[in-house]
Length: 162
Image 1 (cartoon, rainbow, N blue to C red):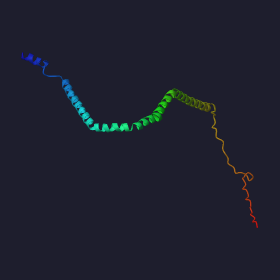
Image 2: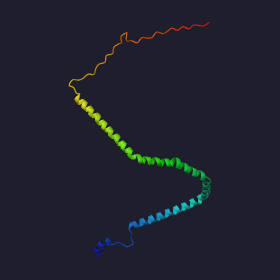
Image 3: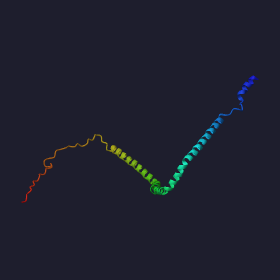
Image 4: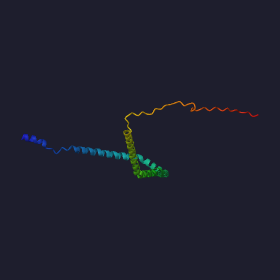
């Protein structure tokens, strides 16, 4: 019987042991409750410190209300509305932009292909067995008649009046 109990004892799980996930969940619960308590403490402390500031800020907001409303209107008129108009126009013109861009790119490819094909045909058709030398340029001195003549200076005399 000793052998049977020795073999069976590892298979028996005692009821007192809990899975490790239970310990993890208990630890997570404690961390969360501590963090909530910290947030509540910080919020209460901040509200007690900021309550005099909120009284002053609300009175300042009432004083500067006309300026703030005017600033809001000017912001709407000069920044927000033109921005929305530009965005609407760009959104409306986007298909035309894409069409023109694709047409330009295709035209570049067609022009490049035409240029390369003409260059290739020209090199094939105009190929000659002998090497063609470029014409030479002779520089000659102009003859005497062709040289520009310097104009003779005119003599000017000034007469004094008496």
